[in-house]
Length: 353
Length: 213
Image (cartoon, rainbow over all chains, first blue to last red; front, top):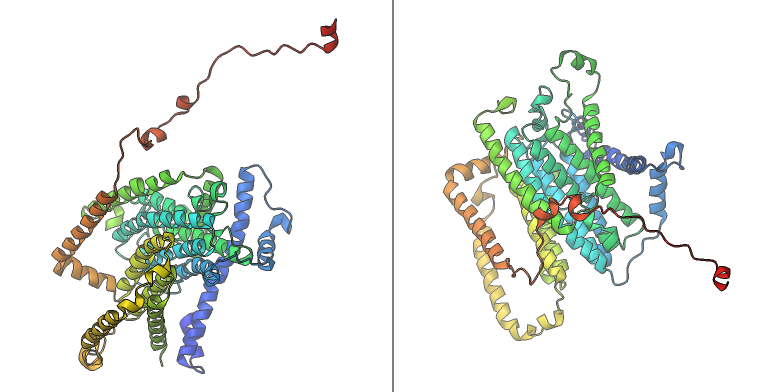
């Protein structure tokens, strides 16, 4: 679709200008819906946690409080951005951008349906891993530039935590690419065709949990939100941020949550494939559901788990958090790399044929 | 100018500027951040040269892990810059000589007569389904398997050495160690004991008038 647009534009524009315009349009088409989902994810979070704690949640702005995210955004945008005394102004402003930019850039290789992807690159999995590893700079630069001890402590905790869990996450991805034989995300989904049993969920069940737990840690969600730790360090790395600079950090966090959910759905839950594939009656009954619909369904389920966990678990103690990452998750992933290797050698199940 | 060329010049320019900024800027934290930018721009240049695996691994390993730890250390140091700069003029002549000799050597190796299309030949344009990862993997695991394993063992040795150097166990009693297994296996009955006892009864305080009587 975008190739046609580019060809049309290049008939009367410079070639590079046509490419640039097409790229910008592609970016907007992907990023705008994500930002809207982010806005209403904050609403969903407050509503879900509200019901879990027997409260109403937001219910004043608009019907059922549905316009609450817009009110929040307006409030954040009109608030004054305060610069702390002796803060490094440039880095102070750059930090939220550093947090948001990778969280948005990673969407370039995410396929939303068969062929619906901005850049269908070979090394998609590696690209996601590389780009999301830059996010840690948002935290660490924010903590340092704020010139505040609380912010700095939060940044140190956060960066150590993120680097630790990235290793487990990387190994989980290694098992996925071992089983799929490709780093292209579209190929990974297409490799899971043929019903629920063919999803990579079963052979990689421990990796599914490892990836999701590491995802929680990467996005600083409860129970891994020691980086914010309200009780000890006020709000961690973003204590000194106000107004829209604070809002951008929130955007980045929720965009990452959605990204992790998408990745989990694509790698372990068959992406856009229908779960009823191969089941005679149900397959025809649900054949009207579009590919994007199934993917969105799986992603919302995973996002609900994110919110559910937040309402359920207390915060980890820092040493236990590090122990979980280094002494439980990483050995488990290394073990599973060998298990997957053995499964591949013996052509085990429907996954290795 | 094609779009690819534009991207190449942009990334190359960013890499050069951030490289220069990294060595000229005074604040070590900012220098580290400029180095990060140089890494990212270089990775971009590699990706335009169709070496996407190397570019992405450069970002993943150097930007995502090594430089974060670097920043970690640099941020916590309280460096007094004036002390570092104390002997600047004293060492300037030797420093200039070293810089000039290194620049001359770099010119001899990287000078224009060793590079250019007539020396290296035109770059091979691979088709869209060419996988750089696969090409590197095949080379590493077949032709260079022993060298690869040797490098891996060397890295492992480095990890073991670093842990052995930094591991410090003090005798129990001097410090309290936490037995995590014990903590995790704790049951409610270990911490909380139900005790049967008679309910306490507080004698009501007699009104003052009765006491007076």
